[in-house]
Image 1 (cartoon, rainbow, N blue to C red):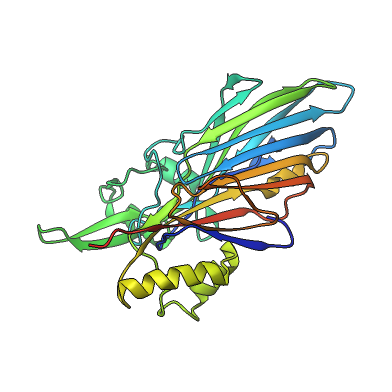
Image 2 (cartoon, one colour):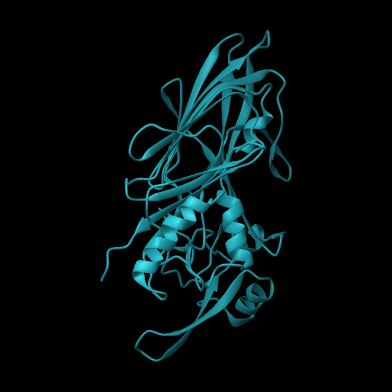
Length: 337
């Protein structure tokens, strides 16, 4: 979370998940012709941020102060992490599939509900293909049992496959060999709303939502098969996994046997770096990470971590300018069969 990282590894439990998912800091924005563009502001400062992160819920409360002599009305944007619709490797754990508000996102300003709009874009191979999908009448947030692409004419299916927007999923579910065309695009989502910041006064903005926490039925973390692989090295770096964390995982792995799966896993991400777009560093920053169960393991990159309950860990910073985003790994023990 800062330029100097240390690891926190506490609890006991784990698994391998294809995705994380979660949310981001508020940032001022403007609606330009090409879509929502995040910008900096010289007038509005973030006096505090109180952030709670778990696999079940994310809550954040901000105190903003307009230090200009005039009221300022700006577009405030809340970008979400990218979500890739991978029906072959495993569909992302989207809490409310089929809905633009797939994270059940809500906002309050000074205690009153705020209506938010959402900008959605679908990318494949780095190209914005939103207009094409909308032209074809294809929903951008398909349900887990989505089969709308298979119903398209063959020429359109082939076009989507060629553009990297879709793939062929082959399987036998007991009724013979089947082929289905499934989405493979990446969703980029940003919630935004207009907010007036009165001159010389604080405004409290609150958000809550359900994170799209990646999960799976087993974990290779701690497995002898994972050691030395690029994926394992990336996990160690991304979550600041230290030796004590790995030792706890390896002890459980030894009890389960070489081919056993003693853990399941959840991964949650939160975009912090857009908090640097305000007029000054965050004067008072507080983060609480809740691992959910005292038996779980949790690892994330932070400084000055303090345990405040059997499941919660607190980080406090003053005059904080976020330079990296937050990634949280939670490992959960699987009961022996």
